[in-house]
Length: 109
Ligand SMILES: [Zn+2]
Image (cartoon, rainbow, N blue to C red; front, side, top):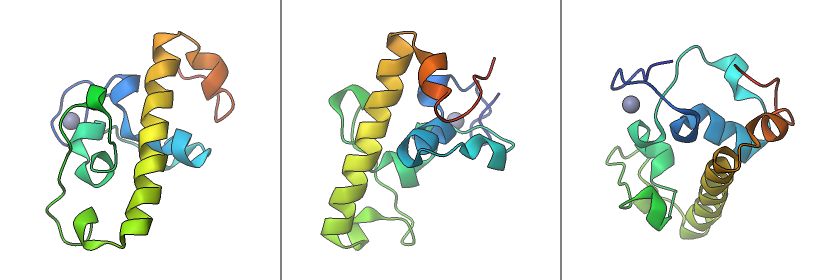
């Protein structure tokens, strides 16, 4: 699938819906009919604090900007999103994608 923001192909490791699915343990794919890069979704990307992900992202929109939120809430979200992002990358690297994803949903092909 292509990204609904930048129109480029979205790989699983860059897919914001997979990130959310891992983070919440729910199959959110059934709820969306588009793909989006994690980096094209600053509201999520701002919570990923990982050198491998790249420079920290800032979401300037006041309704999403983490700098305007309660720091303890932000810390929690950073932990959740960062762990989910690492889990996503690990699963792809180790080619265990189907077994891990099947916890959430049927393996997409
Ligand atoms: Zn994109």
